[in-house]
Image 1: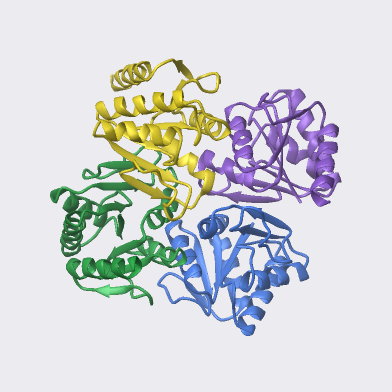
Image 2: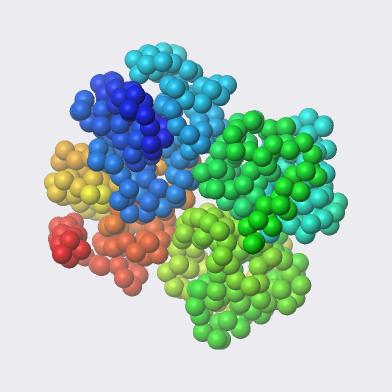
Length: 151
Length: 151
Length: 151
Length: 151
C-alpha cells in the first residue's frame, strides 16, 4: 500500500524531524512512501523511511530525474513540472500533509477532488483535513481508516 | 488574450449572475474566455461571453466532450478528469475565481504554483488572491495588471 | 466540431500547400481546426483556415504560449512539452495527418489507442490510417464518416 | 537506474517467455523494471524480475490501481488512461519494446520525441529502433549504451 507524504521543499528543522519520523513509521508498517521526490519534507520523509528499511518513490517534476533527493529507491521523472503534484495525490488513497505552502495546498485540494483521505500536521486548516499533532497519531488514523474500508 | 474563469459546477443564483456579467465584460474587452467547460460558474461566464459576442473555450474532464455546457465555441475534451484543472490554469496568465469549493481551491493553489495572477470574487480567502467585489472591479484589476506587465 | 490536423513542424513546400488547402476546406465546412499550434504543417493548416474565415486552436507545448504560430485564434499553453500531442489527439474525433516524422507517428498511434479516426496524406503507412491523396478527398472521407456515425 | 519495458497487454507464449527472461536479466543487473503495470508483456517482465529478486514498478491507467498485475512492487495509479504511456516512457532513459500493437507503437514514437533509446525484440520496424533478437542481446546493448553515456 502507498502513502503519499506532501509538504514544502523547504521546511523548519522541527517539521523536518516530524517528516523523518513519519517516514520511519510508514516504513515500519510496510507501507510504500510516495512523494514529490525533492527536498524539505519530501527528503525528510524518504530519509526516515530508508532508516527503517522502507521503500521510497519520488514522482519528479523534471524529465530526467536529476532533481531527486538522495533517499529515493524509485525515481519517476515526469517532465510535468508542478502538474506532477496530481500524480503524487493519485498514487495513494491516503495523503499526509506536513506544513507546506501553496504547492501543498494545491495537493490537499486536489486530494479532495479525487476523494483521497487527507491527514495534516502543522499544515493548512482546510475543512476535511484530519488534523493531528504527531506522526504517531497520523499512523493511527491511517490504520483506523484502513480498518474501516476493509470491512 | 485568454482569461480563465474558475468556480463551482453548482453555484448560487447571485454568483451565477456575477459570473455571467464577468463573461460579458471579458468578451467586451475582446478577451477569450477559458474555463472548465461545465455547469455553474463556468456555464454562467460562457453564457455572458456569448451574449456579448465573445469567444468561449471549455477544457473538459471527459474524453468525448459530452460534458460541455451549451455556450462553448470550442470544446477541448481531455480525458483527464479533475486533472484538467491544471490546463485551465496554465491556459491563461490571469485567473478569476468566483465562489467555488475544493475544485476551485485546487485551481487557485495551482495558479500560484504556476505564477498566475488570481483575482477572486466571493471565493477562498487565500493569501495572494486579489479580492474584489464585482466583475467590473475584476476587469479593472486585469487591465491594471496588463498595463504593468506591458511596460 | 473539431478536426485535428497533425504533421511536422518542418515540411516541404508541397506539403505546406496541401495543409493550407486542407485548412481552407475545414474552415469552409464550419469545422474548428485544432492542432499543435506550431510551425510547418500546423501553421499551414491554420493559415488556410484563417484565409477561409475559420476558427483555429493551438494546443502548445510551452507554458506561456510564445511558441504559437501567427494564425491561431485560441492558444492553449500546456507546459507539457511533447505530451501535449495527446491532447491534440483527444480534442477531436477525426485526425488528419500530413507528412510528419516521429512526433506525428506518436500522434497517429495514440489516435488509434483512443479510437479516433485517422486520415493520412503523404504520411506514415500504418495499418488503419485511411490514405488519401488530396485535401478534398480527406474532407470527403470526414463527411462520409460523420454521416455514418450520425445514423 | 530504471529500464522501461513496453509491449502488448496480450501476447504470444513465445513473447511472454522473452519478456519474462528480460525481466530476470534486468533484475539481475540491479536495474528497476518500469512498465505500464498490466497483463501480457508487462506482466511477464514483472514476473521475471520478481523471480530474480528485482524491483518492479507499474504506472497504471486506472485511478485506483486495481488494474495492476500480480508482480508489481510499486503501483502508480494515474487516472490518465492510455496517456499514462507517456509517463512509462519518460520514466526511463532506455526502453525495451517486445512485440506489441498500436499502444506500443505510440510509446516507441513518443520515446523518440523524448530522446530515449529504444531497443526492440519482435516489434515495430521503425527507423531508430535498435532491433535485437534476444533479451541477452537487449541487455548487452543497454550496457554498451550506459558505458557510452558515462564517459
